[in-house]
Length: 137
Image: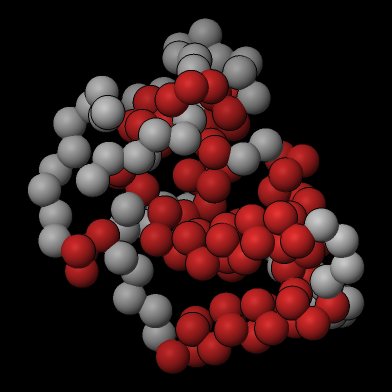
């Protein structure tokens, strides 16, 4: 259950409208990752989930719900054997159309330094671990 106010928006307003080029880029990264992957399939599935979810929420929300270590791990999986590394901060916008639905993002929006909150170094706000993964309708 959400603990913050979420504006009512239509389904279309909650989703990133990908251009044909953006969609092709995601498809290429996905295919490369699947073809090159060796390891635990749960990790591949999670990395692909981040790839497809990222445009809708942005890299800030991804950093709220995943640790820096996990982000790096998923970026390596998505890069595969490619010469061009996948970096979510370059691939996705900081905020997506559904960022506002994230409880953690709502907390972080109220402070001056995003990274201090993410690293639990902020005196302004703390980001409770049990709220990092909460998303409203």
